[in-house]
Image (cartoon, rainbow, N blue to C red; front, side, top):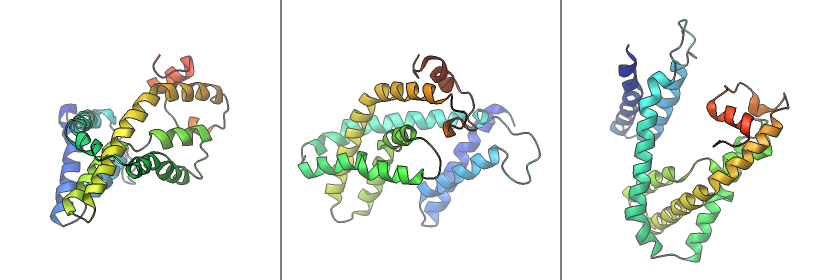
Length: 218
């Protein structure tokens, strides 16, 4: 199959899984997520019956990744233009306090627990915990709650809006500083042959910049 047509496959799998799940009263988002894992596994030739050479991942997923990035940016733009303003008019210390907890303790501790046994160093665990799952997922889940009209949906929507707004602000302003700091740590730690962060990691352009300059943006 030509490369241009292979780009449609990832989108077709996601759309098909989502539609099938919604039709059968399941979760379309979970279905698309699981379908993505299965698709990636098949694409990389992880199936037991795969004997032929695998196709380059970028030859099939580039369009889906670019489209996903564009839609994510448009979603956050729409969020900031339409949803954040009304939420700021109903601020309270409870909403702000819980939003800060969501960005720190409530999120970073589960990430750390999920990485137990991975042998990743503490700076990596902290970096993943801070810059891991961010605001867009909260917007999606908040919309799902709003559609169900559960009790307290207005308060939940305000909490989600303030959490996402703080995420954009705090993660955006800290990205350059913390990425540079983590890059310098990685350059120093990479000399250790037993470093888990080095295991089975391809030499990507980002990794090459980290190893040569200590800064991801150089």
